[in-house]
Figure 1 (cartoon, rainbow, N blue to C red):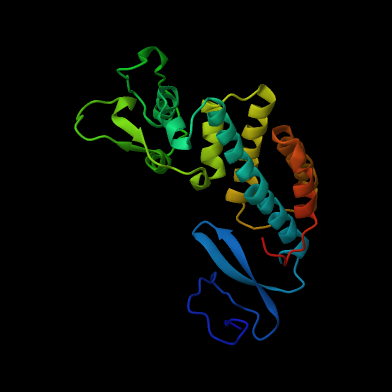
Figure 2: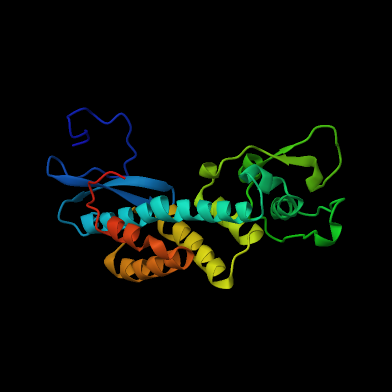
Length: 243
């Protein structure tokens, strides 16, 4: 059956060749990763390829940890860092010469600045994406041909606008972190990409989850030991409970 649960037909389909082939038998829609993209395939309800509900619940738990714990934690650490330096806002922090110079060279290659030239770095990789730089800074008009961080002014960005990747990048490069804290931020960013951003199945199997969960608890608590209760609350949350 190629229809929604309420009986209305699909307005869009993307079936793999030869699919669906289950007739009127109960089937589950699956997504196959093929050379030509993500294609639909119908599987019997008993087939092992059907996503296990516990695998989905584990994915939901891990996603909730990053959304409800890690992301706010990164933002709070950023706020603590700039307020400890006597700065009144995140925009003030971004406008300090040290921060704007560091971030400028994380986005721009082959640039020599007119200020603080001894600290210019030509990075082989540019981890700060174009859209992230544009979120943070605006180029001042009237300086054609001048390739320097002094051309830019920070936007009135709010911490709530930063995702984990961008907040983590700024923490690692512009804030005072101990070696243990820096390692925790690095690994949490990597886990977010590995288990959420690049997870096309929306599921995490039990064996993978057990080692991941132990690490999540450890690295989160290295940044804030008071997050234990939040982690336990999320782990025990039923799949159908709203965020």
